[in-house]
Image 1 (cartoon, one colour):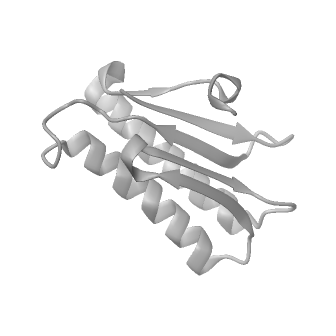
Image 2 (cartoon, helix red, strand yellow):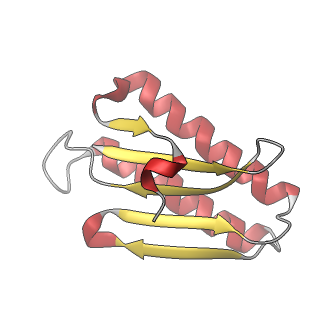
Image 3 (cartoon, helix red, strand yellow):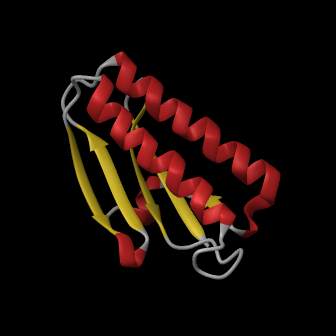
Length: 112
């Protein structure tokens, strides 16, 4: 199962996320749920890097299916919008496939 958690600021805007695990929907290389989540997550990181001036911390381990991104200091409204877009896309996957393969969890359950 893929577990995803968002970190929110005092305005309840997303300022980071952790995504870990594998969907288990199909065999490695054929798992469309994992591919969809990965595409959304990687696109979000790349978009924040390319289209905004926001700085962020990034940790990842592809073998473990782990990525963590947290915006630093005062993130731009564009970077927050990109994280909201990620959240919207992930919720669409969850709603389409249910929580059997992807689950949103509380930040404190996943934070190191």
